[in-house]
Amino acid sequence: MTALLLLLLAAEPTPCADELCRSDVEDLKLVAISTGTTRGEWLAMFEDDDGHGMLARLNARIGKKGGTVTAIDSRCVTITEKSKKHERCIRAVDGTHEQRAP
Image (cartoon, rainbow, N blue to C red; front, side):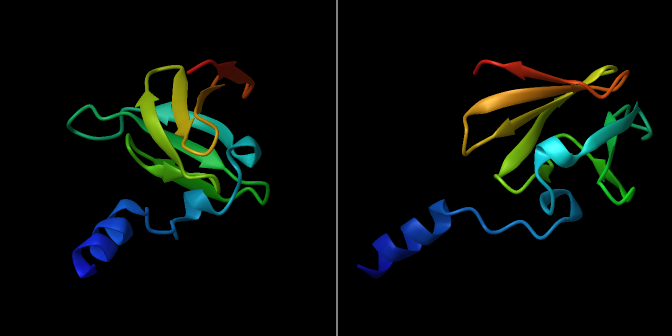
């Protein structure tokens, strides 16, 4: 019984306390994408409604609905939200959202 309880607890994701998890994905504006590291890793900078900037890397947790940054390239950041099973691509050029089917 204890092993089953531990297994169930391990399967539950821990609540995200990061800044990127405090807003809904729809409320975050993508303001920049850069390869700001020596390893060539893509970074995305988001801004919340208050103008506070936050950096996201690949696999970062984002949004109140349990999203994860699943891809970053020179124009786009793809976020997969577990609760809705979809991906959202946010274009850096104009900040528009493009809904993509899973």
